[in-house]
Image 1 (cartoon, helix red, strand yellow):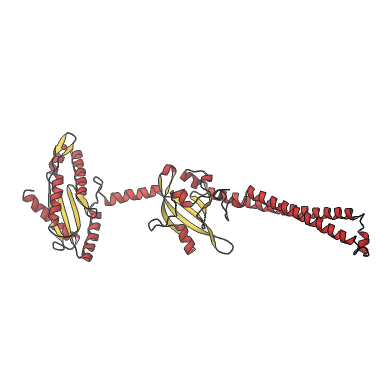
Image 2 (spheres, helix red, strand yellow):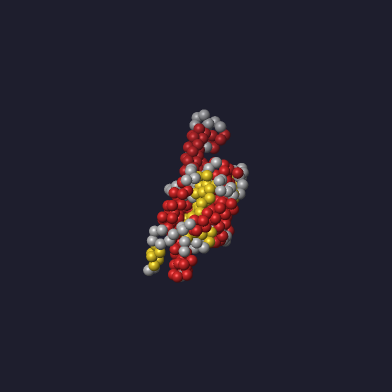
Length: 392
């Protein structure tokens, strides 16, 4: 028998099954037959003694004559059989009542779970196996009940071979077992057809009579739409809608963090202020749609020129800023600036128009040209305008 399909649980149908009934009936018959055999052997032994020479002089020995031996034996066997039958029937009735009560309790618990709007499951803490789930749980995952019961929670919801215990993906069940308290977590479950769903999880302990935690009630609420809305709001608040680059607000935060890191490590940091040359002419002559596409291409090329730990942002219009952190030598920034200008000068084909874009870059270096966001931006901006005046 596959143990996964018959989970042993405090709550759940595992204790009410046909296998248990058949085992009980078999044991009852074995005990009953053994009892009768012992009783027959005992009665025959007693009667043999009473009608023997040693027992013939007794009053009782006179009653148990050889002629009456068979009658007494059958009578006593009948009495023993009746007693065993009554006991077996009484025990069976008590078991049936217990099974009926447990089955009724299980059906009631299942109705309660199915009435809830969130996905609910009951999980054994010893092996992480599911022993009861509600209809919402099954519907969100797109599976049948038999595909869930007896399997581990991480196997069903995450398609993993081991429990989720990473720092960025903690296991609330384990936290509840360790602390003995209610716990919460944010997870990503695999829904229908493997679609990733953001869920908010809450876990509550279930204790046995001794106070030991044996199971947990696991409630997960689908917050996919809410998380998507939050990401959209964050995107609008901190990122440029046209290029997808960080905007001025997010850039300021990144620059503050980079300055703090540079100060701790006693390193240089460079800020590059880039302005596209003659961008207004492109907008006026070819239209804003071409101008927008030019900005997108410029943003992509800037990203390809930088390291992963560098930052590029769009301040607005045709102005971009780049943060070069952990600068070994101040002279290195000039090499990076030349690389950026060369990348921008490559021809761009937009519809039927081939555009060659150039740019002007101003540079300020921490700590020589400033130690805060405003001073570095101001000095880089001034350097950029001087570069324009010098003929780009």
